[in-house]
Image 1 (tube, rainbow over the protein chains, first blue to last red):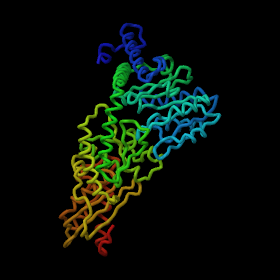
Image 2 (image 1 turned 60 degrees about the vertical axis):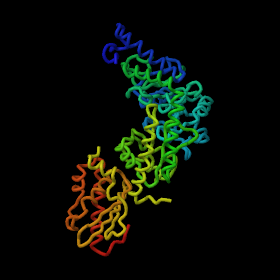
Image 3 (image 1 turned 180 degrees about the horizontal axis):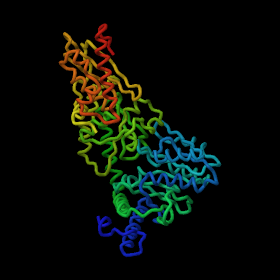
Image 4 (image 1 turned 135 degrees about the vertical axis):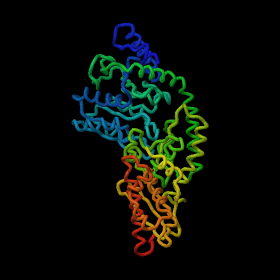
Length: 365
Length: 125
């Protein structure tokens, strides 16, 4: 941990300590840029996905306010996007929330129709955090390009897990978060394509080329750089091995447990996510029961799990409320093993069976 | 966090399922969160000789309902009438602050089941 102890300089300082820290930050920037096929100077370090999303939304809307006041996004975005948009609505902006189909895929025709002469920003997530559905970002960027609208994508769930090139995606802005690819929590980045104009969210010194004031979190940034370097080396392995583990888990559960259904698109989906509804059981009860047996799963979004609100993503897909309430999400990583899946396949069916015996709402067959 | 007692009940789910020869049954529902508890008692000579439950809902509602079945078993009807939300919480060594309503649901199911037995025979759920 040299950046907590020996190389603790402020990267803005001219002395040797500071310059060592600066060199570490720029090396990290190169690793982040390489992972998403960007130029290093297009990478702005932030405190995480939420700040990246807030910077993208508020930064573009603030700068382009004189051109228009309309934002197009979707009903299944992360709360960092949805709450930012709601805040802007209270400040006089118009926001169109494009719906998704029953697989969680954006309805492209409605997105096309939503764009108007006042639209200054389109923000559509690359992969959904709850169901893993991958949106047709390249197709959306085509629309944005034709209308000369800035296009932002929240790629927090996909960076480091599947190959991703910002040039091919055609986005102007892209959010990523450190802890989603095994970097420390509290660090992230925003890709800002050269030529995209926007305001800063945090005003202060001239850090990050005047795009984000504040002394850099050197240890976090170095951790993010290393995670991106390792993530790039392991991209092929992630897609092959983690997908295989996820499929084994999902198939095993569906074969062993009746009345289960997978939520989200099966064809356009991240390789590490499986969101499954178990008819007749309340998701949170199953979550706690599995947790007590050493299996960590989620209901809805992890950030929102303290609330009683059902998943806004699953509700947006217009599936039945019983299916929404009985859904849990298994998220795998490169750290998972075949033995983990075997254990889950031993525990999950028995737990579901026991909880269905308990449920006054479950009738088999 | 759930206490060790609550955790054990959530995983083991003792006394789960219907009681076919129940003499007292009742359903309690929480209209806010949608939790449902069915309670089944078999009473002989004013003593609860068997008690089972079914719950659809959060872990707190499940633990509290299981707790009620353990608190009632072998007790006289009069002793069962003394069981309150607080007795359930005490048995469970507390519940998470935002989950206290689980104990209210279980207490309501018990209170209704006992009241039902005072009139006609059980009508079922």
